[in-house]
Length: 356
Figure 1 (cartoon, rainbow, N blue to C red):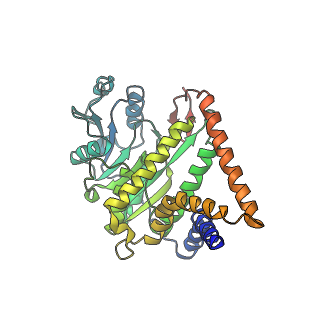
Figure 2: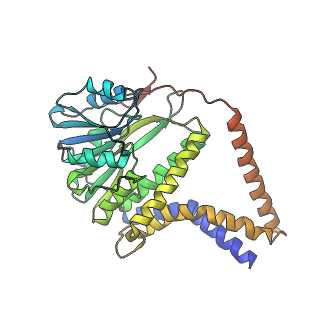
Figure 3: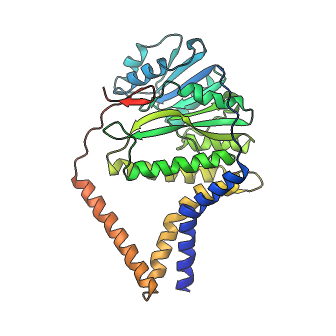
């Protein structure tokens, strides 16, 4: 029985991380659905929910004002979620016809703040952005060009994680993010990706439905709701945003926990995603989202089952698992003793990223 459980766990883990990407690769080659982009200029509202962002709010506003898009068709809605560090004073300096400041005295969190901002948006296209990341100058044009295709309801841009030298990160976090973006791109060419990049994604305004105020992952809930309504959620690697790769394992761990918790929340609140009758991307969703949620449980199953089969190849497998976990434990201890350098602020200029 232990041998059967070992092979079941191994097969599952290999499918999620290797088999599913291979399926996508073949599927895309056989049944690709390219987006019919067309460069046009609909009205656009950029929605930014911010709380205590005194150090980054000014750079974000200036970045939005420098985008290559007609100013008469652009609205920047800066929704301030009860800030207490002086963010509001800085933001109001830029209030004008383009930059609209929405200042709320009661803290509601990101999702609730986005709901209130979306209700006041005037643009035909809603673009969701975070404060920390910088947009490439042509990011808006590239995003909205996808909506020339009537089948498209949501578009995610590409977040570039940069290292201290201003190059795309090639460490563990950077490499994993490249893998994740590749998966999303393959899914989008078949039908739809399973979630957007929160720092840069856009939707048609008429498709926006308010989300519960305590929603953790708006960038999954909003696009997947649009997919369930019959539209595509696609990925565009030419619409770029830039960020500094996290130098803190603790921060990266907290981000992963938040992402996993948010995915469980999405499943609980949108059970129709688990139905092949309602979800047009059911296989992709089960393989990508649900599969990754189950990976930890199959890792535990593999380890425990292996305890009852310590002979031959199974002994080697157990030794490999033990070595892997010991290395992970040692790495976590080392990260606690290593001081984390302060990340330099980056400014996006064209398709380059420079440090001021």
